[in-house]
Length: 244
Image 1 (cartoon, rainbow, N blue to C red):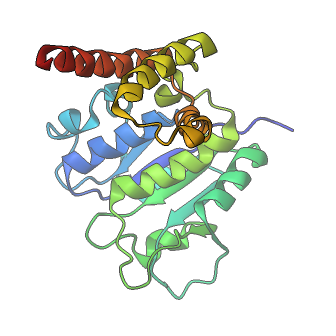
Image 2 (cartoon, rainbow, N blue to C red; image 1 turned 180 degrees about the vertical axis):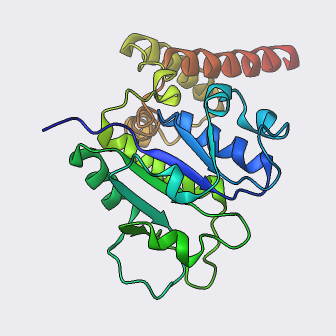
């Protein structure tokens, strides 16, 4: 089976340059770079798009402009239309994840249409598509903006396309500290609590220490967190020494 190329994201009659830039940013976040514009209201290029793209300049620089939706999707075998409104057109309706599964397994080029900010896709636009993509949302407030719709579709595609996406928050996590570092911190804490009768009555001292140890070992502290906490204890001990 042929590997499906990344989908083309087609912004139909976009109104604000800022929204085009935000859509480009959303696309590149998830490994997509081919944007097509159909009759942008303020022409193209738009000076407001660049700052909103926050570095996704390559997407904007290579964006192609077309006069009609039909021209924009002429080379695409499958066209999906994002809409939350009923158009009186009988077509399959997919969620973004279901559409992504079809796009990544089909092998042919696909295009996803996104309508203008104020009104969404027109009936004639949707008529060109084979499938409708609808995001399940709160029926009392079904109002996604352009960039949000792009993010949802791009993210679902990226999960199935094998894109090497990074998770910086995971990479920045430090490993748990060695046990001996925790024991040093725990001994320091107990030494400070002992003269203040924290472990009174003595008959409960063993159980109290065990409870304290259990509580402190739950987070799985890193060496940096242990060092920080010991700094707190050292500061408290220094202050107590001054008062003597």
